[in-house]
Structure formats: C-alpha cells, structure tokens
Amino acid sequence: MNEKRRHKIFGYVYVICMIGLNISALTIYQLFGYFRPFHVFALFSLATVFAGFIPAYRKKPKDTWVEYHYEFMNWSVVG
Image 1 (cartoon, rainbow, N blue to C red):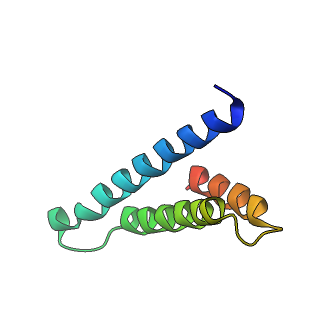
Image 2 (image 1 turned 45 degrees about the vertical axis):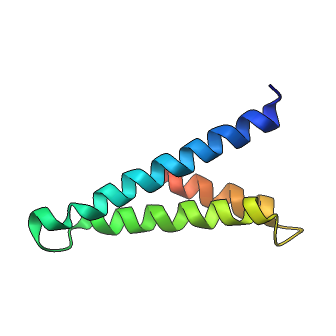
Image 3 (image 1 turned 90 degrees about the horizontal axis):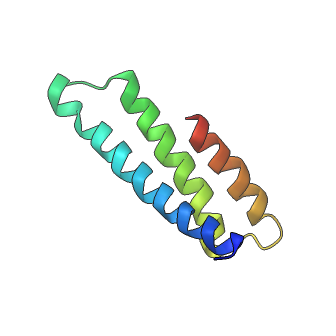
C-alpha cells in the first residue's frame, strides 16, 4: 500500500473515531444536566476535525486546501 493511500485510510478512521468520541462526550450532558468545560472542548474538536476534513475531501480552495487540511488537523490533535 502506498503512503498516500495509507494516509487517506488512517485519516478516515481518525475522523470517524473523533466524531464518535465527541458525540459521546456531548451526550454526557444528560448526566450532569448542564454544559461542562469538556463539552466546549468536544465542540472545538468537532469543529477542527471538520475544518480539516472538508478541504481535503473537496480539494478546495484549489491552491490552499493542503495548508487548511494540515493546520486544522494539527489543531484537532491538540484539541
């Protein structure tokens, strides 16, 4: 398997896992009955995952999608 294909497969797995993790974090709301700091982190994480995934998936904007993908995926790992 070439490197590009492996990166793409791992990327899809990462995005799916992060969506599942963050959705489960947001459903913990029912335990406490109010919004906690971890809910904010989960929303931030979801936003950065989608902000990094969408440019790579659409390959737009044509000249800068790689930079957007790189920056937002790095922030999703930090988040």
